[in-house]
Image (cartoon, rainbow, N blue to C red; front, side):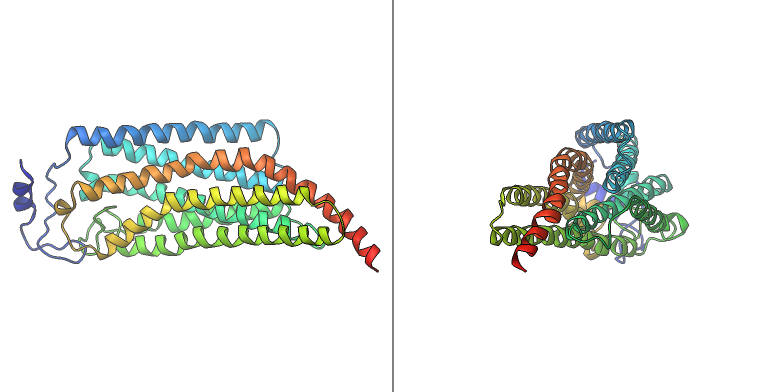
Length: 338
């Protein structure tokens, strides 16, 4: 059947979809088998690789009994969040391969995996923000003795992150969905409603971009100020310069990874909210883009273990050394200047 025939078949009746008329919910098969495999197999592969990577991180941290450190609790929880994102992404990919049309027209079968996917992504975002804040506090408060980020603080942050992610992600399961009403129905993520996607996407994506950017910039500024202070005291600044470069490099990787992973999804939600075309008019380009955004989000889950585990070891060692340098040298400089 040609696309023109499908358009005629789908554009009948007077039902509404996403607030516009002349679109029917006739579940005509429109996906080609080759296109489904071309999109589905890479998604499955990336999800499986992400599961392996994050399981490795979790088992490694538990085997080395490294969870007594506050940052290690956050790293391990980030791996759990990415693991659940990969599992739910794998679930959605399997549904796409076995019955691709329900990912366009929506089905009750898509509600639970999409909800779990949303919970996992929100938990990942909140963990990334928590890690950025913890790193900032670790550097900003390293000169002070009044406050230290303790393991209990990290555990509390993990608990709050999951409670918030579970509540917001389960709203469609509680009734905020468009299974029984076609008005306000998302054309990209049926049976989710467009207003729910906007409610979830806009504030959380903004937080994922702004908070880490601010905190890591502040860390770089603090290190630079301390380097200048040490230089004024005639002390060596090589360690600070090395730490500053390492923080800047890692921060850029983290921020760019989040930008590349979530910005396309955010653009898709904005498009969904402003779209007035029928499903068939958007096939195949927009739906290929939707599947690619899912792969990019999984790539974020795949990249997090590399950035936060491998680079964090070097960075953590440098920041730990800086605490000793700051406590000893700056006090000595202060005594000399009195």
